[in-house]
Structures are given as C-alpha cells and as structure tokens.
Length: 116
Image 1 (cartoon, one colour):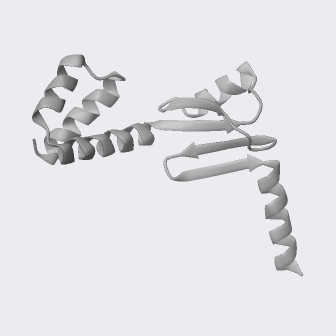
Image 2 (cartoon, helix red, strand yellow):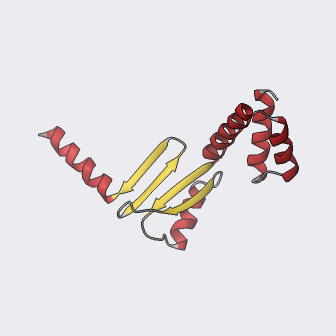
C-alpha cells in the first residue's frame, strides 16, 4: 500500500474511534513491518491532533470538566492525573498551556530578574 492509502485508512480509523478486526487483520497480513510502523506513526499523529490532554494532580470537578470540554468541543478531551503540583496543564498537539503554581512562580521570578 502506498502512503496515501495508509493515511486514508488511518483517518477512517480515527473517525470511527476504533479499528475493525477485519481491517486490522488485512493490514497485518498485507503490510511490511516498515509500512506497519509508518501506519502506526500516521495513526498516532492523527489521534494526537484530535486529542486535548488535561493534566491535574487532583481530580477536577464535574463542572470544570464540562467547561473544558465545552471549550474544546471539536476535540476529544482526556483528563489525566499526574504529580504536577497545584493547577492544571493542557496539551494540544505540540502546545502546552501550563497553569500550575510552579510555572507561575518560575515565570514571576524570570520577569523580576529581567526587570532588575
């Protein structure tokens, strides 16, 4: 299969939200190892483009989750809990919006240093 066909199949998989067993079997049997790796990279890129990750240390309230989902209604929003300190981080593709206390303190310190 050529790259255009792999992208088409990957887009179909992402749009449906799952891969059909028959398609998966066909891909595994027909694609070379190199093509399978390429397909996986395409699939990962497409999923990443469509997903917003919201990371917090503590569980977010239902209201806050709904508000965030409303802001990004065209994307799939995934809520994760990790040790990041107080606040939240929002990751959209390659963009990181860091709204943690640690980030605020570091930013404030850098601003003060540049003013002195």
